Image 1 (cartoon, rainbow, N blue to C red):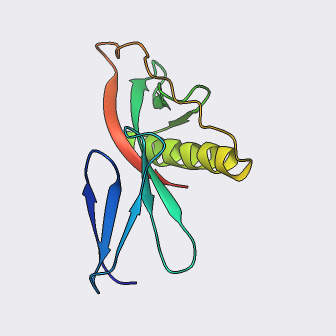
Image 2 (cartoon, one colour):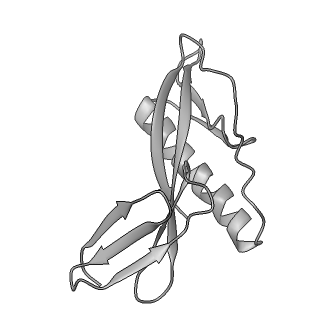
Length: 124
């Protein structure tokens, strides 16, 4: 399909391809879900905050505060980020394949002072 330009307005996400054809989708959750299309099947990109905590014995634990039960770890920040992306993708794909709503939390505790917070995007 070529390059896609994404514009987010207040009602929907509008995708414009290189050939100027457009498609519109209304996301189920404006904070976390972005709908994208290709010629064969739709895919989704999700945006989620993750928080890293340095472990006393070395390495990092990481979790997604807005999606209960999604956590991982790694010896380095980069490895921990890779692992949490994989965990998020797997959890999201499971919810979607079972046609279950994704249990995003609307509110969750602010991060601890020592936490490292980052927003990541994952495909599902």
